[in-house]
Amino acid sequence: MKTLIICASIHHGNTLKIAKVIAEVIGAEIVRTWEVEPDQVAAYDLVGFGSGVYYGALHKSLCKFVEKLPQVHGNKVFIFSTSGISKIPLIHDYHRSIKKALKKRGYEVIGEFTCRGYNTHGPFKWFGGINKGRPNERDLEHARSFAEEILERLEELRRSRF
Image (cartoon, rainbow, N blue to C red; front, side):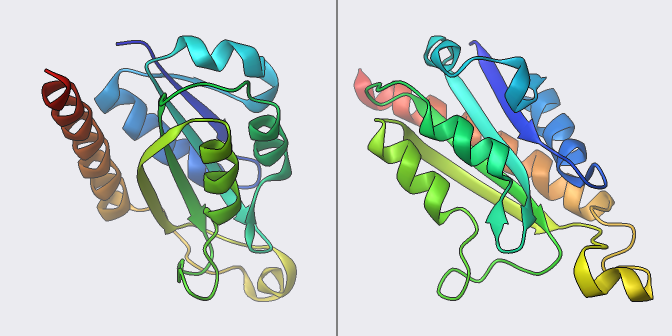
């Protein structure tokens, strides 16, 4: 299976830590948004889109990249992120806009993962940041479990086609 993770890990490398764990489990190559062209994504069986959360949204480079993706039919993708505060779907769903953009282009989102990450943006820098040491070993283990679940979902989808 040909897999790719497109990662925008800009500030402390939190999201890249998660991307590496997921990539190890699913056998993916990790690239930055500027290292791959949007039209190349359709050639992959599975693609992950990961970013830190910046002021309530995924990084602009990842959002702009997704907006340039070509139309496909049912290609499988997943989304993951790290953030200073927890994702609360009814209040601030960090993945909402990218999920909507992916679906609009014909991609099927088969999973989402998020965890806390060390954050020194804005007022947090004045007192040394929040979530020091995150993502931690427990977060990385949750990322491994998430990646295993993604593989299980893909297998279920393959079986249901036959």
